[in-house]
Amino acid sequence: MDLGEALSWQGELTCIRHDQDSGAWFVIALDSTRRGPAAGGTRAMTYPSLGDAVADASQLASAMTLKMAITDLPMGGGKSVLVLPRPRAELDEATWRRILELHAANLESLGGSYVTGPDVGTSSRDMDLLGRSTAHVFGRSLDAGGAGSSAEMTAHGVFAAIKAATTEAGRPDLPGQRVLVQGLGAVGARVADLVAAQGAELLVTDVDPARCTSFQDLGAHVVAPDQATSTACDVFVPCATGGVIDITIARSLPAAVVAGAANNVLTERAAAAVLGQRGVVYAPDFVANAGGAVHLVGREVLGWSAETVQRRTAQLGDTLHKIFSDARARDVTTDQAARDLARERLSEPPVA
Ligand code: NAI
Ligand code: PHE
Image 1: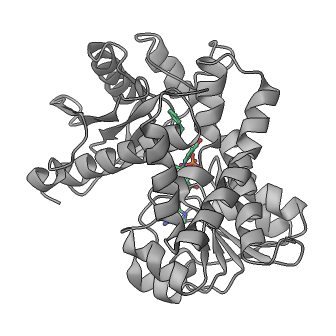
Image 2: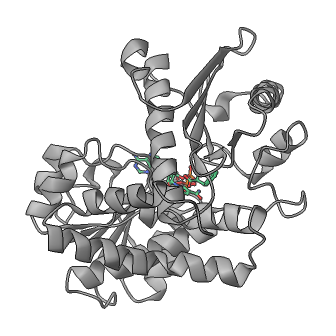
């Protein structure tokens, strides 16, 4: 995507910076501060072009606005992208630290209108490093005074979404159902554990085969990454990157339910309509994966206890039931019903 196209986005602010020494680009997109400071993670990876990185940051920032609104958290939506000159695993520690220091300086210059946190390619340890130079960081480790990783609560939220969506699909009991988890990282591995503990038949896939081994040892069936969306299952759980389901895949996906953590899992909103026409129940991503935001904002901004965070995360299942029922009543997609509910809340003052 060219840069001009990427910048036609209607968010509040896009900041772009380049560092000649490391070759990294820094993109911060603030979609909305209507409900509070914009919040959203820092994604660190390589991109085909700067335009693709800006488009990714913008679309992910918009998803964060919807996520914060639908969970009634007093934050807006934003996202940062660190466009690495080469894959993170190939960067030496000094270069990575330099990139984080520059990112922290960028966060400081925004004066708290944007607060970051972990995302793909960054961890609590990286948030600790950022936290040495700026206070505008969620998800530092517990030792450093933060709420720790958001992955566990994200996984619990995805599990609540799976239960809500399978119930909507008329197959509420997980034992015996084939559940395919795509991406066994911080969130996906935990979701796989949760569904396996319920007696589901587990199928797993990851581009890093080592991540599949422990699940294979426990009896999971390993699927090749390029077969993820063509392997028959009851529940497809995308927990890798976004852009997994386009219209063509939506027409053929051999699953009854889609519920996972990956942000912006649909390449276009029309894919939700195709899934719906085929009777596939789609749990909108920004609801299914909101447990991490509930954890970070709940613990670090609202002072919630771990029990309150768990309760609010489990309630994502109730929110999904409401969305499914509204979608049925109005004959709109579940994605549309979720966006409408979020927009309704965006027009109200935040109530945490
Ligand atoms: P992660 O980086 O720990 O794990 C991602 C996993 O997906 C890795 O194991 C990677 O090897 C695998 N992967 C990448 N491309 C793949 C492909 N094409 N096929 C199969 N596997 C592939 O990331 P994390 O934190 O687990 O996040 C997963 C997704 O959930 C991301 O899209 C993220 O934006 C989203 N998310 C994460 C939250 C969190 O709290 N960590 C909160 C909300 C959303
Ligand atoms: N990156 C995660 C998400 O997409 C967790 C996160 C939430 C990070 C809120 C920062 C702020 O939900």
